[in-house]
Length: 561
Image (cartoon, rainbow, N blue to C red; front, side):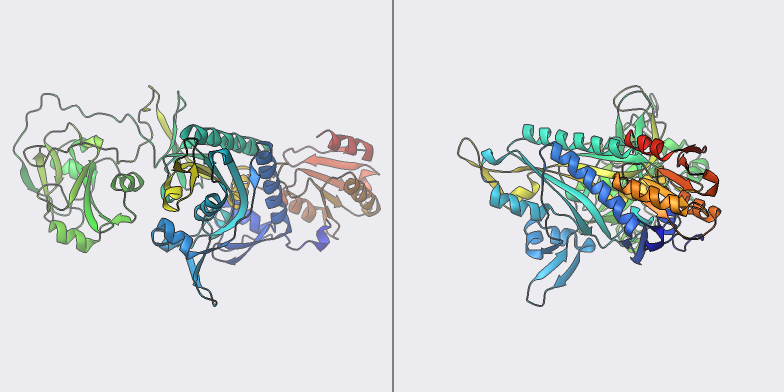
């Protein structure tokens, strides 16, 4: 392609509304352009990257017997009502009424649609195992969009689903797709880390995420420095430091005035007690009930873990009015002592075994000290893991130490089980002649997000450095004064040899053209000018040194790469 005809040119200036590197570079280099918040048009350069990702995914899936389909972007609401997600996902759905009648929505995901296919065509154990895949656009009405392609409303997703007769079959399908994912990311050149994860709104029992480390990543993972334990913050467990109170005698509970003292550190100092004796009590609104969650003062509550424990659809911190109504105190002074009987109290494992601990007094400015299980609050039937892990804590699997890293989620694989097949009556006849629900898995890669992740990982101060596998063109040909005729000949020869090349045929200075080439970030740069004397100056984007070669040497070099 000739750069002079390309839609979408480079920009020298930083563009407004783009703070992270990938967003800024993709805009400035002419790969994408915004249409609305979280919605982008992909210009020719960006579209070619998407095409390359699409091709790699389909090739690796086809090798493993995965069949390709395409499902509609518009779904009838009736399908989503069968599973109950029309209500559960209400905040994320873009719903509209058709003029011909009926309610429809823009697809945020395709579990219902693919389950509908399964109940029509997967009718016997002989029809399984089967895995189908689509690369399709999705839409989620995100309230918060940021990071360019990292968090959008409209996005392209690789979307596979497996159907099996038993758990053993599901495990095999799960491994097949995971293997394909490793091959896909290896071909692209992205260094991924696979971690245990929470299944979230999709549901299911088993879940893993394919992550790439990045400072701008919204996800956090914990990795053991000795073993192979890796987990998302929402799923991570740890061997946390114990607080030894062996031999300490229980004391009578006492109310203490601590006006305006809320933070854990100031409170511990004021009360002259270790931070480990303080208790953070948070009130949550879980669907139509209020629950209190207690963790040791130095820890935070994981709302994902809490939501899974409570099995609720909607979870959030209780409002100040609710806190006042339930406890009689302002926010910051809630505690487990004397709460109404209809308020369930959940105790984290970090609070187990303590004596003479502190908690809010359910009275503004007051705290209770020397609180004890059995005497002042009911001893919990069980202590649960509801806190967020901290960096530096012990690995739950070995004697290693956990460290934290920020990551971008590229792919997510789920063992769905029978959540959707039971809800939608997707059943098969087993060998014993009985009807059973199909056992499902689902597997997704964020294809548009992958573009941003690649740029975050592969760039320098001058611009993007595309991995060759997904680069929009393999080479950037630059013609300078005196080299136009030779450049045209080389351009034609490269095209005939099947080499994708972007030819900067514009009139302009060498400095401008070199800066644009670095910004766009193609793997190779070829320069032809009067100074090259019939030869071609070649340089890899990842290297600083250039060299002169003949056209024959160039073709030989490209053929061997």
